[in-house]
Length: 516
Image (cartoon, rainbow, N blue to C red; front, top):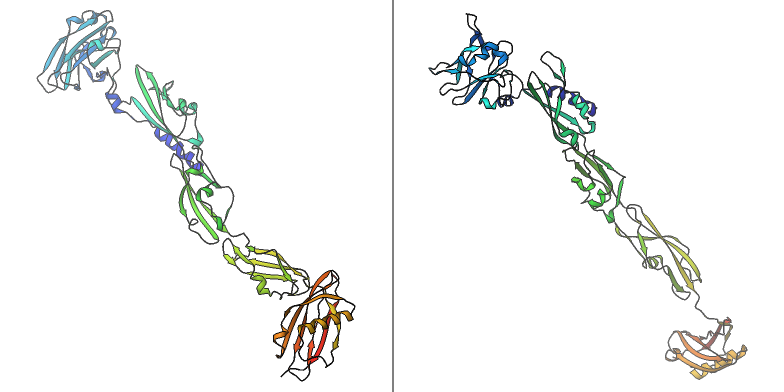
């Protein structure tokens, strides 16, 4: 619709501009202009070949003027004897008057006279020859030597030059022939006339928006008129701004405005616009610190001042999941205390690029605080405020670190055992007891004796021993429980390691009296 209205506007402009207007300055500046209007000459009542001016003629004071006649105007006889005649020139409303004799240029068939009026700006002619066969007479400003040919009298209101203005849309360019079809020259009787192109900046120009001058000329009856046409090419199309693709930007790594501009495309029908030519009119994006949709409004302006704007939505998003930091595996021994869920989680932490530290939690747990050796899988999870979820699999290795043990039936010693046992008694008893099970121990010695200083105190105390079975050296311990009763039990469990063979526990109960 815009283009249709534009075309109508241009056609209207052309029709208006070519209702051609007079250039009065051009008329007044014509050199050799004929000031003599023959319709102002009235013949005398006697019917002779002379007359007078009915209305005065305006001239300039102290300026030389010339009147020229050709032989056909004067007629053969008058031209032959023209030197015998005079012309009377009077100042209108003044006393100034001159009677001037004619001079002739026989080679050119011309008769003339020159005059200057000193006090009057308006004059009358008397005894002025009337036309015979032609109308070639001319009154002009200047001397006879400046005469270059007859020109007809042109009324002061006559249009001598025309000016036109033609607007053209850059996107609907016209050719020279199309422009000339808009111009018609006609004779006074309405006949179509040819005209010449004198100046043409339009055809030789680059046809970019701007002004181009053209000039046309045509002549008839020795009268030449000109048309000055100003062709103005307009760029009426706005630049086009397009978004190449929707813009989503991670909140944690926001783009600069220059980086955002690379996602915008701008074109123009005339100018080579780029994103560097875009102007930021408004911006809610740059100061944004939270997830959401923001906008920047850009504007493109071409060299003709045409403008386009586009509001560009920018989505700040958080699509990055948190990261869980911590070990891939946890190692425990069967003899260690089991780890609680809280203790396990304390070894891990999770961070998010937007929310910072986030909570880590257990999704599944096959460990279940067991002390049985094995490899157990725990699934950890963490999520940010946008629901991005991270997972981590952790393995808990429960390692068996207990050596083989001997296990012996309980045996209750006779009450004849001394109330207090020395280290030698313990060693002898230990060796004898092993021998009863078929094990010959040697190099038996006490490493640490906890019982020695607590013989009279209730509680459990250990005696640690080292010994050899064959070429292998082992360690073991005996636990002595001292009870606050009349008959007390002395319990001596022995742990013996032989290679990878497990023999169980040796539990001895020695009954003794507490020493008061």
